[in-house]
Length: 167
Image (cartoon, rainbow, N blue to C red):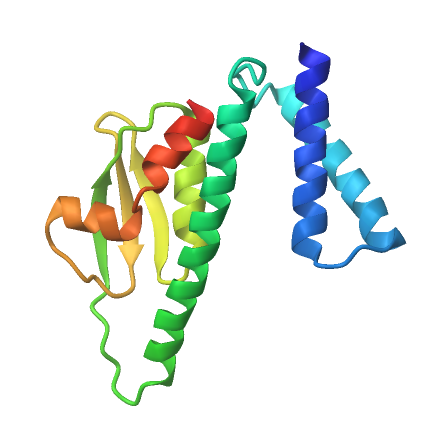
């Protein structure tokens, strides 16, 4: 089962690399193979992925696709919002650090949520309080003040998607 997990992780890393390089030639295939190999070795040596891929692999794959779709849409929308702020003549922002309670339990799931928030323009995950399960996020333009509304605007349904994909 360990070999199957290694192969699946390798293939996913390789396809992810090729997909985001946007080009398939000898150099990208070679660097994709090297990157995927190094990544898999790093993950296996440090035992970073602690769940078993075998039993729910199809479900996890479907949620991974849903995560990718949600992430790409959020990227485009948030890039447009930040571009509008940059190009406007009047600087109309309301920066704040907000608390986002989360039900995610595993370190990997919390890390994926934090990295997703940080990679989305206009938000940066700055801290995580493990005792209270609260993620602190710097938000360039705070659009809400109620905790549930903030969570909905910043995380959306990513939390549930990440939970189904990882935990």
